[in-house]
Image (cartoon, rainbow over all chains, first blue to last red; front, top):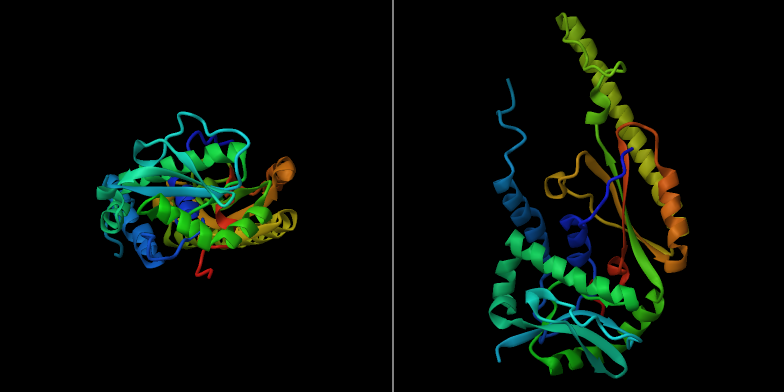
Length: 64
Length: 257
């Protein structure tokens, strides 16, 4: 077991809390982020922007 | 002035002033707004970035989201040093100070209850990963020999499948036991969705992603408990994060009236 030093908090850990936790304020004066949007942002936009920077781990097509 | 108010947290009046150089999202200084004996910690943000539609667009920009999330956390972190803040969700924006006051008045009872419940508590994050790569090496430390024949290949493949199933079973049992133990020691717990490895960049698969609400004075004990739980099985890894403000325990997340 290697001790991992976290000098900087991982973005995913932050988003687990900042986008899924915290008090949600509702009301017409608030410009609230809809939960539906969060799911889309979380899973699609983030993954695609990460993928744009990181080469795919599966360079070859699968199957014989 | 085309600036809006970005609110980070609500808390009881502070004994100590905010640090003078506390910078929030968009680089503006954070300040306090007192209303009916509660404090909202907020900063000014430009309307062109934080009105509803630009905000939505920005949230899909990973770089912008990262900077904003870190700035938000920076303010919450500073508050955690001097009080027990009730953190609001990222991107809570109002037109002006009076909009913030109206909101504080409407939610006053909720805020007071939540602040009482969370007083002196922090959140710890615990994750368990399974990493098969760590178990792939042969016992000798060298990679398994190349199969000499078709039968040899099938045998090796069978062994790998067995090892895989066994590791998964172990990891699941371990995660379940750990969660039960930690839940008993924390006052409350939340299970988050397992993190996607592509996003986290962590090696292995995340099988437990949980948060525990722990009184500050019992944090040391909690951390020791996590350290001691460490399983010796190669391929199973535990990660601890925190202490966080009690983001996952505000109790005011979904549709609270």
